[in-house]
Image 1: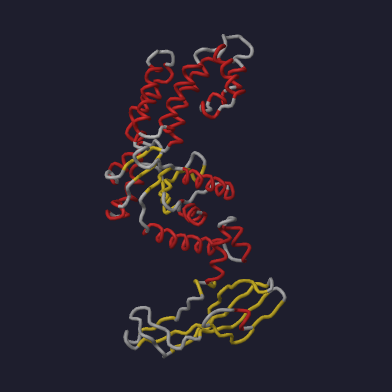
Image 2: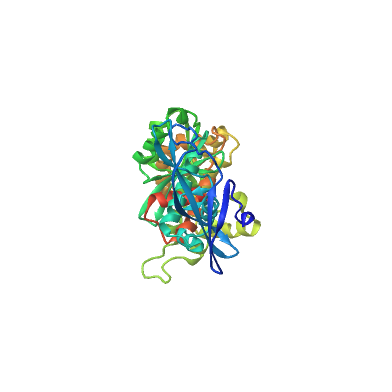
Length: 393
């Protein structure tokens, strides 16, 4: 029986129940003199003994319970204070190895499913997952973070949001702060301390004004860069507006839009260097039929060059070429794009000076969170979502 348990410093006293579906074993600690939790002094004087049931991993498919014969010791240094002995093999009402197995299962399934798998209550399983995630978060938050990635995601679609913070050097999520406003991010950065904030050299975020205000307040020394994915999406909105205007037909026409222009909507978003001969020929034919699409497509191509350029000077040259196209007045739909660029030009152009960072890691993490939300049919508790998210990554 001793080899079946494989618990260090645990002695098997006997088997209480040995049924086909259940196994109950009486055990006790082999530590002769447990240490007082207050003063750390070993004590060999036992006041009494009490039985404590602890769930363990299954043995041969049978639910296993350990009846731990727990001593209450008397500390002579603390004036006769009594304390219950503890053991590193136990985590509350379960063994440490069962807790590890349950937390590992919770990464791939819901907490409810993991609890049913091991015959535990949901509350106990959830408490173990949250406690374990807290240890992970504390460890990750103590690590140095040179590149900070910031982005928001929802715990329930269009209802509740959290701010996800990822260490850009390691790719690990170290915090998920409730809400996505200035106070939420600023408060977390303040709690991290001045020394940790001074270690952040680069911050990558989406185009959130709330995040920008918090970053300027707490990380003003760092270089703030906008994520390339979000900037390109802003740029593409101008071409989309031109395409929607071009594809409209006079009222009463059927269909109400030009099907050829509509079918080319994804092709128009392709960069010039990504097109093959057949695709370029198709675009040339489309431009002959709808001339306004030609300058809009080339304008978007020049905006792409802001990121394809080898350095800051080449990016500025591409920006000048875009300004020449926009100055012709043929694409007024790009006015919002121009206004957005003027508001964020420093954060966009700093991309070349900051080593071309990206929020790609956090975007991949958000994809994992989408799967997590589907498994749980959405979350209502921020702490539970953060715990699952930390363990998942």
